[in-house]
Length: 100
Length: 177
Image (tube, rainbow over all chains, first blue to last red; front, side, top):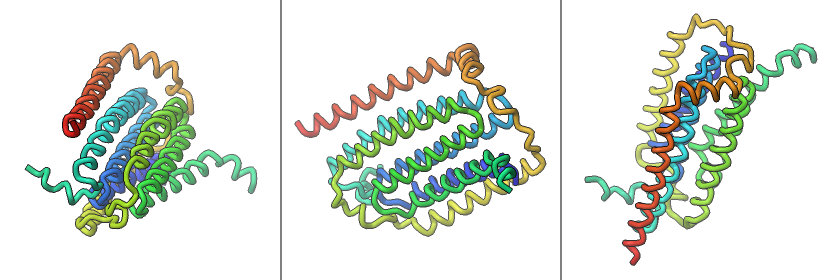
């Protein structure tokens, strides 16, 4: 296994771990952090492919992912605080009445 | 022995950082306290920044530490500190989807890894020399010449995020008052 394959395997593993975390964990903030982990896995794969293909496109995409992650967290945290204010807990199971 | 080790120091460090990043990402699933999960995520990001630096994309490594660790995770840590520590969600870690979630995650990893192994089995290493196509100059020129539209669109996205955050705050004010 060479360097590129190790990094791609790590990227896939980070994405899968983030997905497991989003499904498995109970705490809303931890789920948000697992989403960040998924974004990090995607970033690693983009950088690895850009490094292999010697192109700038991957780096540009990584920058766009940075911006999206910052915007996501800037909206998600106030929403979580609002949910906690109305339900008094971070437990995801107690938000099930939000289902349509 | 030592010379061989030093000659391969880059690769060795890369594997070390990759292993550390994987271990701290796995810790995120296991640890109970959100603050510890946040610290595990921060260490994952720092190790990924080290990997980016070793790959020669130094500006992405810098922005990984500045934006992710410096801005996003500090915001997250503040949110964790604002909330009540006696929350029941802190004691019971896992939702009822524990077993199906882990099974689906492992199956997902296996499918992706199988696809990657099939596609990239014969890809030669042959990467570019570090810094070749990856200087900040080439990146900045390409960014503002070819991708200026995307750059402007990110500013629209950020404005939308600011407006949305203000709207959320207004909703909470209306609820309280």
